[in-house]
Amino acid sequence: MFAQTLIAGLVLAAPPEATGPRLEKGLEVRWAGTFTEASFRPGVRTVRTYDVDTRLLVLDTGDHGADAVLFTRVFLNSDHKGPPSGVVRLELVRIDPRGKLSVLSSPADHDNPSPKPRPWPLVRLEGLPSTEGGMFVEFPDKPLKVGLAWSREEAGRPIVSWTMADADSFRGQAAVKLIAEQKTTGYYGDRVRQAEWRRQDKLTVLPGTGFASRLERIVERREPEADDLAFRSVLTLEQQGRVVYSGRLFDERKEEAVHAAAFTAQLDRLLAAGGRDGGKPFDALVRQIDRYQSENGSSDTVPFREAIVFIRKRAESAAKGNLPPAPPRDDTAPEALLAVGKPLPDVTAPLVTADGSITVSRLRGKPVVLAYFQPTAASAPDVLKLAQALQAERRAGILPLAIGDPTDAKALHKELRLTIPVFDGTGVYKSHGLEATPVFVIVDADGNVRHVIRGWEEDTARQVTDELGKVGKRKD
Image 1: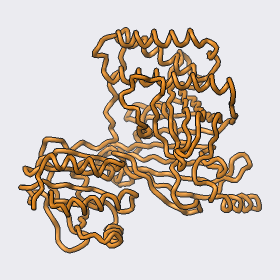
Image 2 (image 1 turned 90 degrees about the vertical axis):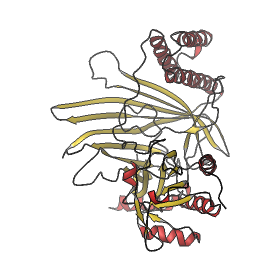
Image 3 (image 1 turned 60 degrees about the horizontal axis):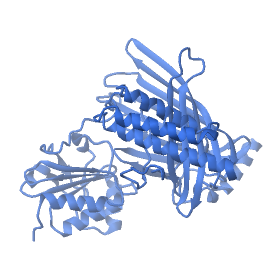
Image 4 (image 1 turned 180 degrees about the vertical axis):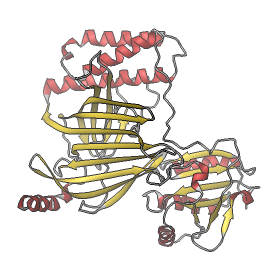
């Protein structure tokens, strides 16, 4: 009891420091653990366990945060009989001061058509965790304390709800426990009518480092009309050590990582093209890798060399026509009812900020913008401000549709001092096949969907405005 009280006291004193990751140039951190996935289909039960090894190497730091390498290898457990089976993946990443990840292009990838940082890939709900960045969490603006809750949005998926759950410890050091949950709205329903899923992450974070020393992630899926789970995966990772490299040892690792990232991006682009140019581009990549390896043989002992070898094998196989199949359809995603060029499924939504309701089909004759949002989400004020601005320009019918507690929507509407009415979209958004917000649906004067914009980024407001301009003219 005394030990628990002591740990809790240390943790509660530490949160002001835990505002983001603390990283330094040359730092390498390694996590190791297992990944188990199990399918429970009628008459068929399969369970596979993989060994997981993830490394972080910090290449540079500055006001922007840190640029680093994330290297992950996932292979069937060593007890597995047969040839090795798994994946190796390396990405260059940027970790901003709050802990948010993005993907960087490699300076060695001279043909990259999109050199700007890209969003970090979403957690895979099924399949191997080959791009694993779950050790990092985007911290809230407020200091951490027990019970603090915040949320983060992901394009095309439900909100991720975070909570600082309690005091924790890692190898005798005071830590905090952070828990994240992301789920579809019907996951806990008594009767499942479509595929529903839930993801939960548990992180043990040392305030002095700002990233997870221990990670557990559970993903579960339920199928329609079934009482039992259809799928469950568990990822566990634990920090194994850290070291700081400098001089030649650092330079070798950086050089290897930069080229591994470039080769990875080149192969990704070739595979995305579906091999339409035959095997020659893959052969060219193999020759490029061979030339690099012959000129940099001294780096054979660098762990990142394994990523280059893996890319070479995949490129060599693809050159022979052995292209991987197209990615399977995500069974966890709802049916895409918002089909561009097709009529918008009609809905009726009650007003939140006044009495009455509106039926979308009655607005035909002019363009309409439906703006689905969650009042408690960080993007909600920006969504409503955009809706207010568009209404002021009288360019179309603007319908902000709140998903969640109407009380929260009313409070936000009042706080922002808006005049545009807000509608309750909670009972109708399933009619449009939505599971996440924000979503902007632009409908032409004939009632046909012309554009669907998901998520909120820096240029979303401009994108919505531009797309609206294509389907309607300003009306005075």
